Length: 286
Figure 1 (cartoon, rainbow, N blue to C red):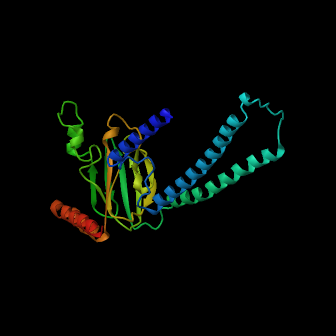
Figure 2: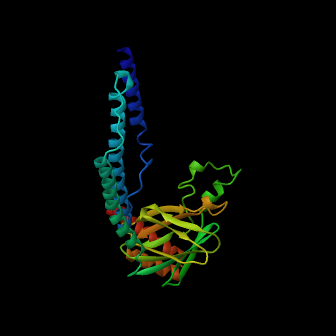
Figure 3: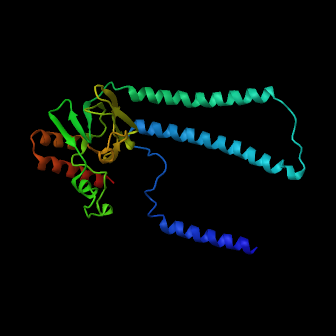
């Protein structure tokens, strides 16, 4: 009885600590994000469907194992059964996995085909990977720029900088020039590299795509919600691999056109003002 009381007391303490620490753990997410595109939501739905199937299989298999171990243990004097095979059982454990695989393969194939269908795009963006930065070019507009690690992060990461990385906002996750994209617009990406293989990845978009030198990969997205979405290079590309983040800022089409016009004219202040207005609109909607 005393042991049970001690265990209960420890459990209560652990629960209290968990409640106290819950705000700090709010951003500690193990699952993949649902995302802000139709593709990302389809991928998330497939992921959860397969996850639940695996959980059910795990519970049934390990439940049967634990029950058999406990109920039929040698200490109870149980004698092991002597048999070789059961045709009925073999048929069942062949048909059920087959049906499970088909139920996963059909929707997964449909989503994969949709991810590769880049037709009907409203605009095109070329992404080129470099060691260690990104280059973005709006193919139908006279706008192109490099995107590199933000200055404060780049300084703080250096040995002997004297800067506490935890004091830098979005440490190693911010850039000097974000990729600005309009919402509710079908955008085609042309992905390539200038040197080695990189991989452009923003989890909220639902995909990542390799950038391969001498080759053009194609994909697309249609962002449904304004906001800032962060990613990174997902292919080991050299010593600076960890210092080439991706930051996409999605704004309403009207604000995007304002930003694009200012960018063409080289008016940095007007371009920043357009993005600031977009941020204000997003806050107001919330």
